[in-house]
Length: 116
Length: 117
Image (cartoon, rainbow over all chains, first blue to last red; front, side):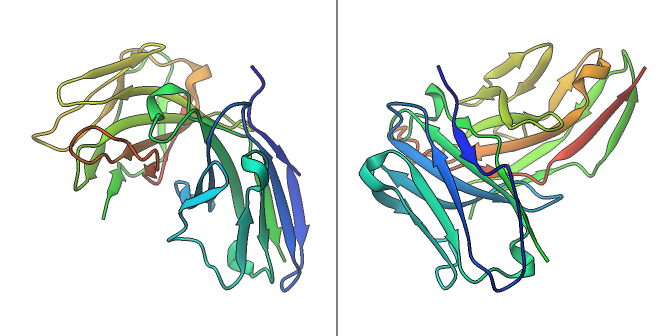
């Protein structure tokens, strides 16, 4: 089966600019996650969707970050305006059904964002 | 809240050496425990998992045992290879009583492993 697709792979922007990342999960996976991985740290959950509804966005900086998952499939994560501390790898992951972490929780390769 | 602590790194070993990467956790429910591996230029991959106390996860010669009494899930391999060079992450997914997992993963900070020929 195809994996979790993310684009772009790399992005360099200036601070205060906006940026968007795209994720296409594995077909049929109801749950989609966005994680932020800062260099030297483990990934941190930003937001979790179940179909097109938000399950957990408690760690999403809502003043600058937004995410949506239209029609319960693809998802976009946006940052506006970006800050230097947003430089990180943004990982998308999907799983088959809520709580089915034992059944194929798959990560994409990530988008590496550099804010200068 | 939930947290995972991994041993300080990086770790540098010679080929065929024994590997241990320590991992301890704090969780309020009944967590499942995982080791993920990230090879250079690649995404995170599940290496092994354990879903209840005393379970042993194993894959590709790596093993880890879920120790509830010491809240630990240390990763071991008897003989490492150059191809094992990667970043290793310990993670947990908490569950409420009744076994319903939310799927959210809490990660440790990662341990860089470098194996020399």
